[in-house]
Amino acid sequence: MSREQARLRRLRQRLEQAALEALVVSHLPNILYLTNFHGRHALLVVIARRALLFTDALYRHQARREVSGAETVVVAGSLSVAAGDWLHARQVRRIGFEDRRLTLADYRQLSQTLGKDIRLVSTQDFVEGLRAVKEVTEIAAIPRAGCLTQRVFEELLPMIRS
Image 1: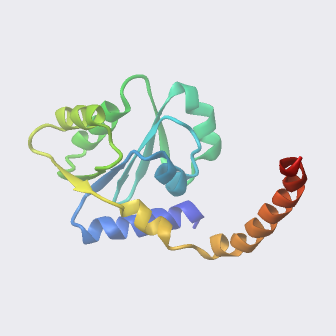
Image 2: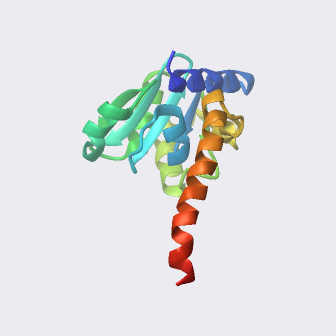
């Protein structure tokens, strides 16, 4: 199991505890954490057994190289509409969204696409809560990062003083 698959599994456990059938992830650092996608235009939909990364044609090749743990869907139009259409076709009824991250315009598009029978549920810190608990590899990288920062500072200090 990849690092991203393990993270998605933990996220799905949180969704189950919150009685949500899906989560729409719009915050790019959260998408990076969950899928390893470094692009600047994406929306991630996570359901019980699948995760789909919606992006546009500009990021097609990058997504194929980077994305782990999710399927990539290349969209010509609005990512919110495409994600909403996909969720609506699967009759997903309770969908969480990152309330501090999803723009109002995207929320409106998603809501209109889903229709009145589907409930959008405001969530806070679902992914951030996972990110706060550091994994073994992240903990191991902290001393190395500190040493690197110190070396860079020592090289920059003479430039700063002059």
